[in-house]
Length: 360
Image 1 (spheres, rainbow, N blue to C red):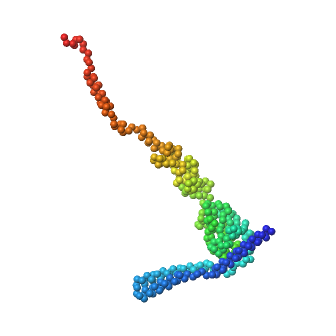
Image 2 (tube, one colour; image 1 turned 60 degrees about the vertical axis):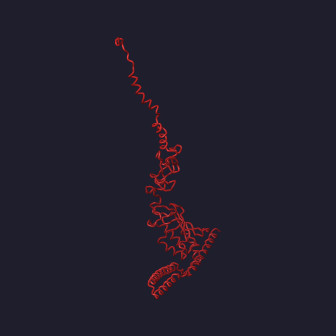
């Protein structure tokens, strides 16, 4: 019962794929509109040139000739692009039948580990085995063919199941879910246009097993290593650190830690306290209200750094200029008079005379 249900599901997909091929073929049979405007511009400049020559307007005839040449060059370019478009969108000689498409879809299960139908996205999903390139295990991938977009430049996407890479590059040749086809572009396009769906999935899987260092989005040499934003050296993912502010990657040697909260910092986001010279993040520093220097919370006292506090204390203990220069006149006169008084006192000391010295 389950096999019958699954068979009916694949038959339903085959019908929708076959209908899509008929739609694409009918659309390609209709020629796109010709670039008539380019030829009309050429005719207009040719008429103006003939008219200027007839009336012997030398300057005008020269300008019309230049305009005619430019219009002719542009027309040739547009018609060449039109021709190239016809060559690239050639109508297939035969449209794949429902029986052929159904056989292609049923054969996928013998080529891939798992094949399924995503009805929401209208995709045929084939899962690859684990992809190993130069000893690096990238894990498995899903090749998802959108049958509603058959006939478009790249109607499929490649999705990583392991996501071993960084950001949106999980394969050296896959960015987000878009495959860099390289030399496989023409074979893939031809297989899809001819209805060889099995060959398409195998071609994409073969490209996933191929590595070209010259065209890789991320080389395999850096797959499990990152570049330090400070010193530029390679560092393994396990030993790397992410700056808590700018999210740049740093190695263990260049990593800096905030002395207060312990967050990892790079050199660009690490600041120092002007007082204790310790490293802090910007949120753990404040500015001095007097000098606006950055200091940590431990060094600030009443929003003032130690240097400004010391300077203010020195100013408060220093004698003022008024008290040192404006001394009272009385004190100065008293200090000046004291030596004179001592001298006069020594001069008028009484002398003790004996009786022999008295007059008779």
